[in-house]
Picture 1 (cartoon, rainbow, N blue to C red):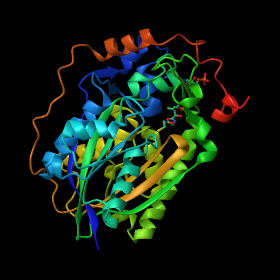
Picture 2 (cartoon, rainbow, N blue to C red):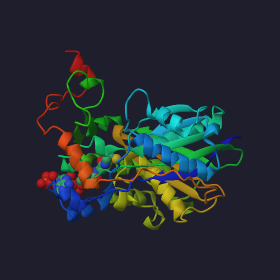
Picture 3 (cartoon, rainbow, N blue to C red):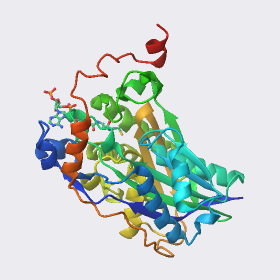
Picture 4 (spheres, protein in one colour):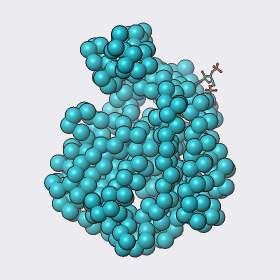
Length: 375
Ligand SMILES: CC(C)(COP(=O)(O)OP(=O)(O)OC[C@H]1O[C@@H](n2cnc3c(N)ncnc32)[C@H](O)[C@@H]1OP(=O)(O)O)[C@@H](O)C(=O)NCCC(=O)NCCS
């Protein structure tokens, strides 16, 4: 039997920090509101593209695994922040890495994209379609955030991380997954402004309106992540007490606490990054995993649980059995170029390019492509 071991891991976090106080300079919000409702204190704003962040994270993961880029035969780029739709972003990472033999796939299930990518790459390795894969979770949400909307602008941040998967006959890696989509609620989280619906509407890049029903998402997210976690543990015959570490999607501290409570998992076993990075969508789970390894919180042979949810509303919970090695085989000297502006300066530059509300998107409230174009 073939399994897909996680043998390398690496993150690339942009250094510029956007604090709650920074957000209060242009939004009617406060540190007290953001911390008490979400647990978030700060988040990162990237000065480079998502492909550049991903490439550095992938180089670090490959060095950690002791794998040459030329030996990679699959790259999955998980996230909903693409430089362009065509060519895809995974191909940009492929050429930057020199992974010339690799198939290159973009996978967008919003915040669950890394977890869905991990499940997809694992299935491809276990079926014999690939032997060595790089799975990336990355977001550059700052570029298309609606910075005039305090309901969402305070919640998100940029970041990236990657893992390397390798075929093995040892029973480790992702051994169980429950994946689904609560599509009845797909309108509760929606970014207007991208896609064919908007063709010919003179919408400029980054000019978006976010539809966001936070309370509905909150309830559905807790229910879906908790029941998926209970099911994946039961399917694999693993008791909650046997889980060494929970590495959840980090959308809100209160969501994580509610999921842990419902699934019978103490918060002492939960890896948290939400306070310092906010919600990095597809990047939250892999960044939290890398930091758990850096902090010595991953036990050799330990069970890891990864519950996540995102736009769609996609959800999942993955059960991973870690291998023996929890330290890197090597390191990469790849680094981001230095940042010359503060996070607030970068956000203000994006804000200056966005039209004020009531603008080009205001008439585009049709709920579907068909309704927009068939009349
Ligand atoms: C968004 C979220 C933090 C809001 O928390 P909440 O406790 O549900 O807060 P509410 O929606 O009840 O808002 C309460 C009030 O705060 C206001 N408010 C919203 N954002 C605010 C902000 N940044 N600063 C200050 N006040 C804010 C609201 O307007 C509302 O005011 P009102 O009572 O006068 O109408 C929470 O619902 C959540 O985390 N949802 C899921 C997160 C998510 O979907 N993430 C993306 C998918 S991965």
